[in-house]
Length: 90
Image 1 (tube, rainbow, N blue to C red):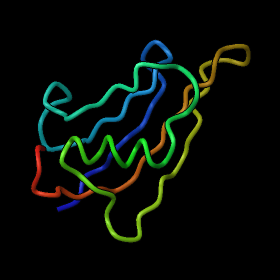
Image 2 (spheres, rainbow, N blue to C red):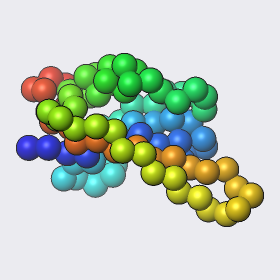
Image 3 (tube, helix red, strand yellow):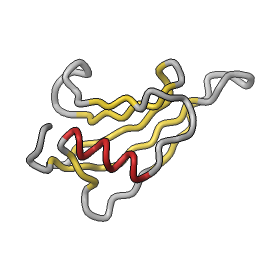
Image 4 (tube, rainbow, N blue to C red):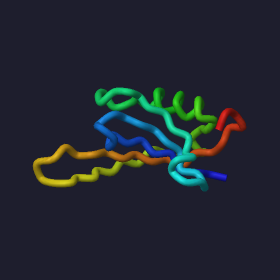
């Protein structure tokens, strides 16, 4: 079974990774990078997913999306990738 992992800087501008599962957002596994810059590297995202018990699904790649809220506002970024449980902590 695959899920969607998402990386966002929308909460107070700090980077956070979470995995959308069947439960409510209060149940989703999450990892905070506790920083606003720089954008977490591919390796940092892979490591965070592993800590949560997930890995990128075969052949999946991160897809980025901008979410502007106004012409003069900070742009929020969202990245998503399909992941699968590794049988670990998740």
